[in-house]
Image (cartoon, rainbow over all chains, first blue to last red; front, side):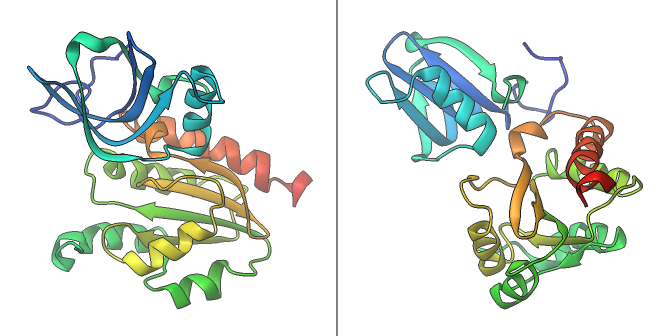
Length: 94
Length: 143
């Protein structure tokens, strides 16, 4: 998924990168990855999709890639146990 | 709260050196982008060292290309808050991000480069995407 390039030296490879966090539950998050600890994945300026929403998850991600993130949370922590995949938004077609 | 002006001065200078005109308040933005005819590039500058630090050199590279937008202007996120907020009103459905780059024709956004399309990429790669957009939207066939 990642090139190995460290975007912000001294931090995780994903620090500062806009990512899609898919979970085991109905929620998908798009926002900037900040860090990770025992509480979970810390994200900034986060948009959230619920499976019950009108648009599909794929459409939510596609629109986020094309039009940017409709931020609903300045900061948010996604519990690690919930996370199934973290992908760079930039790697997805806009 | 805006950043220390001394901190951002080199980032402003990098933009003006490549020919971008700074818009520092909403009146400047309205006078420049409002009712705009022709082609324009709006660069939303940022202090983020890794994203904006690659986006500015990318734009400098892209501006060596032909065709070019007729006007190149810049607003500074986190610094000129009023100007940035007003500029974003012209970006329609595109959500705020910084750094970012909007290409406009006759006042309408025809192409938008978000921060997530800049992160972790080289200036050369970003510039290649920009020049492709210049060709597509500002080329002779569409002028």
